[in-house]
Amino acid sequence: MTTATRVYVARLAGIAVFDPNGDQVGRVRDAVARPRSGNRPPQVVGLVAEVPMRRRIFLPIGRITSIDPGAVVLGTGTLNLRRFEKRPGEILVLGELLDRRVTITSSGRQATVVDLGMEPDRAGTWLLTRVAVREFTGRLSRRGHVYQLEWDEVSGLAGAAEAQGAESLLAVLDKMRAADLANVLQDLPEERRAVVASALDDERLADVLQELPEQDQVEIIGALDLERAADVLEEMDPDDAADLLAELPKQDQQTLLDLMEPDEAEPVRQLMEYQTGTAGAVMTSEPIIMTPDATVAESLARVREPQLSPAVAAQVFVTRAPMATPTGRYLGVVHFQRLLREAPAALLGGLIDTDIPPLNPATPLPEITRRMATYNLVALAVVDTNDRLVGAVTVDDVLDHLLPPDWRDHESAAEQGTADG
Image (cartoon, rainbow, N blue to C red):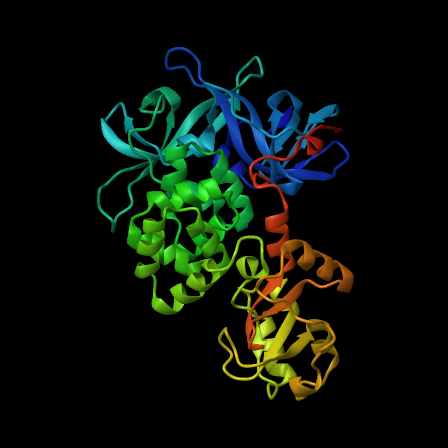
């Protein structure tokens, strides 16, 4: 193996993994180590890489021919694409050791792990030999010194952590998409997952929760204090917040809704009134809504708002005032491509597509799916009996409810297998 003499694991996180042909197959997310007897440095047995479809796989250390600061290169052979599952006794280096509170044995001072270095011995066996720690000062305004120590110069690395923050791990995960961060959280031990989740800011945690299976959403939201949980629910899309609340006991639902700001709680309450499996239950109550006297330029400015998902930003729904759902009378829709073809000063009232009938809140999912497929749409308006727009069903809403309930947990058996490197 040609590689740097010593590699720090936190610096590996996120770098690309290449096959022998130079094609990228994924990115490094963690390293896996196996403890050894006594206080000897653990043996690094492989890396965890994330490949397309958010699947995390195991790369045996023997399959890796090169580890450098910019890339990990695999040797020839068969690559097992089965989803990584940690075996009993194994350690996820970043997930379980980063941010752990330890003691520097020479001084007895407390410190926090900020990175871990691995290097090969004379036999070519990779070991976790070095620990980078930041001395704990107890003062918010002052950061302690960072020391590079041998594994046996630190105590508190073995067994369950007595105290463990999340600062260093969050720095490693900072640039991940919400869906990828959700995948990382699923692989962490339960207590560690709760600590990392609670350390995220409200908006980031809301985005991550929306990408997690319902059971993990309930576990994380239940570990937060009620005021914080209500703040996070306010940051979630109303339909996702309604789905999460529906998994909680009735008393908890009401408590959290009462703690939310009234204007944030109201659309969630409305969504929770619709029957499961209908347009009303899966729609978003916050599509892009404009009046007919709005211009193309104004509409495109709304479409460009970065927080909008691609499905929501694909069209503008046109209604009479008021524009908050339930709106005034629904007039029709203007698709994004039409906006691009028209003059910036053109009014939406002259561009409306009225050929596609809207859904009503009771329309079942199979009918929604058929209509979207028939007209090649990514969203459909939902109107009430008074022709007021109450929301829109987007294609991602439909997929979330048509896929098996556990689709976020593991890939199906058909997706598991091997690939040649």
